[in-house]
Amino acid sequence: MKETVSMNLDDMLLSFLKGRQKYPASKIKVGVTLFSVSTDTDPDTKKTSVDINEWVIRSVKKKRGSQSSYGCKVFQFNGSDDKYVHCTQKINGLTYGKLSNKKGDYGFFKSIPLYCKKKFKVGEHLPDGIFTTTLAAAKYRLKKDIEYLEYIVNDKNDCTCTDMVKMIDEDIKATENEIKILKLKINKLKKGSLHVKK
Image 1: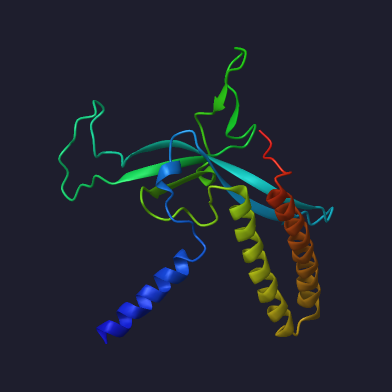
Image 2: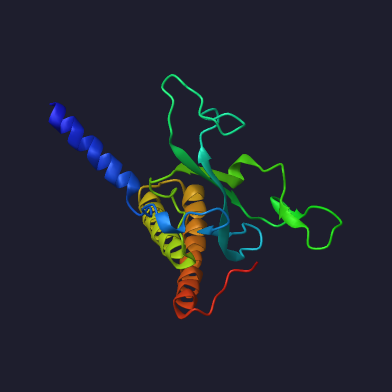
């Protein structure tokens, strides 16, 4: 019985990690930018957007409380020497911008919304959807959008409510368009003709 449970847990872990990038030790440094890609369709204008999101590594450090403000190791019961990578999504005007009237004084703001922050343990897989290249992030988004499209198509087939079917049809149309535009962006990334706007 224990062996069966263990195998199920292993399968669950593999499923959870599937598609997530393994820890790229040589690239994880302060100042390095990681990427994710998001797709969206405005419900009013029906305009579709594919955005490349930048996640800048701000620090790589031990969990707060594992060392003093002077850098001396502090004894903790059940303490850990594990280090964590802290990233902030770079969004002009929200998390990043001009800090003062000084020329060229740009940087991250002190107050950052929680949804614009991510952290992960050194050595572990990168967070879901986060990659070291824009191409890998775009391919992952495409895979997820295709899976979502399959899900809502099946959902429509099981639906008997007319109003709900109409809503699902709109969602299907929007998702199909997002996939189409995302594929075009991936082709541009493969050719090296698309660059992230700074």
